[in-house]
Amino acid sequence: MGLTRTLTRDDHDAALALYRALVGDQGIDTSTAQFAALLAHPGTTLIGADHAGTLSAMLTLHILPNITQHGRPYALIENVVTAPEVRRQGLGRAVMEAAIETAWGANAYKIMLLTGTKVGAKTYYERFGFRADQKHGMQLRRVPQRTP
Image (cartoon, rainbow, N blue to C red):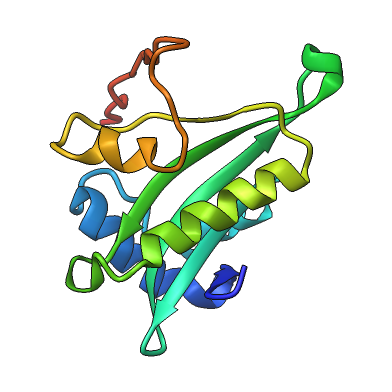
């Protein structure tokens, strides 16, 4: 994995900065407890890459158990982000390649991800071999309940 590493609790603040680069402040749980829960979740790995000593790219990889495909797990990649000031320097590629290598190393039979409709996003993932012609990605979102 060379340039990449698994994130730890010490990466909390730097990871939050990257999440903000991805989605702004909307909906981010900034607590150290939530970050620790994500890190501790079975089958979940946060993979990051540093630039000049700072966490500058990351993603979340979930490897999930399965009963079909002879019990082989499947993987889900989520929240892929590179700091805007260091884009196009190979850090995003490094975390993606590390995630793919990790999923295949866990004997996953497939790796899934959803991407936004931003120009170039689909093409970016196609460079890694992802295809959109086999299944349709759909989602159902629930608006958070407001408590009085």
